[in-house]
Image (cartoon, rainbow, N blue to C red; front, side, top):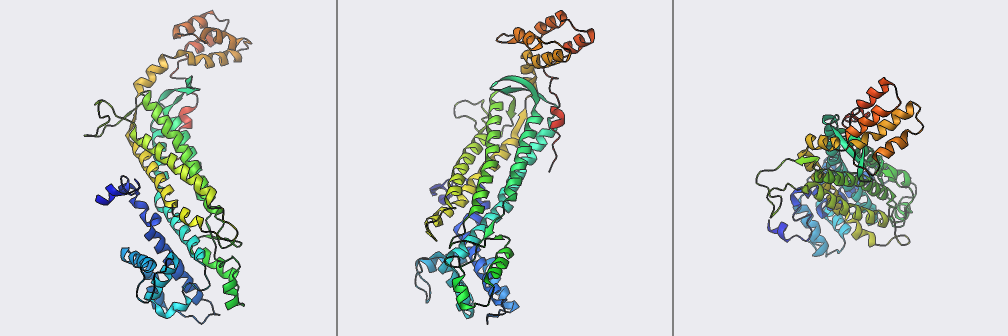
Length: 455
């Protein structure tokens, strides 16, 4: 509790219980573990080359992989000690990737010359960061977004027939159903999830200036480009064949942009739900013992949606910054991106909080059918569109003007419409059709549109 209360960031303080799911993918220990994995798998890949004299048997391969598979806080602490204080024969490296190399050497000294062979730190880092991002997406953010979409689909199906006044420009407009409006967001979010999933992360392994120089000078007969492609793909990423020392990061920028688009959809939803609560279209299930206002006991505030809005707005600010920054590097390499990339987890954490809070809010909302129907009944002018459209169908050239003269800038009742219907020069069948119009029934195909697919 003390560490949470004294944390500099609310992500590790107030929201620590929520963000802990991201710790394996956003913490420094998580980055260390990913680096160890890259170094170990690279070492094993070198051993599989016929050209090198390196040979690693099955038992040693298992032991090497155990270094990252069983990586724990003690492992991370040792790497940090090597970096900052030194350990055994190693002086303080003041270099995080070199500390990882020495950590592996401590366990398998017999392979020392081949650990990190020909590599630059960025070869390890770019792949490690992508392992973390891919893990965060697969294990945390993608399930978050799916849960929100599932909740929206459920609301769409359950309330597909519930009529509700729509508003365009903030003014009463052609009615819809609450379910149809939730289906709109479910469909938008589904497309946004698809855009995120379509981003292909890509990795680079080509040495200090992207020329494979160290690899080539050691073993000029090896097809290092093919080796690099095979190794990067074995980690689950596309291969970046041309790079400087730095992976250009266009893939990460595309991912951050796609996450922003998904967040934009959910920000729109947060604000709409907030307005529906404000208009009393939606109530919220109260939690026993919870305080809504410190002075107004009756209040149940839409705090989940407000929290989600704040966190997603912060996430988008971070994602926008990251997207623009990570694709740039002076000449063949500068280090300004290193500290920036350490904040990728921060952006993802704000996304995670926003998604979790929104999902929690959706679980609490309860449509207020009585309020919705009362507002429809008190706004009969919204059937004006239906009236003038039917009259147009019947050949009335002044149909729009007839309804406009009755309704524009005036408060009208359903009786005013009925008097108009009785005065119109239309057949009795059409007159009956007009008299049958009601605001609550004028929802078009909204009910059908709300039948959005579950997946």
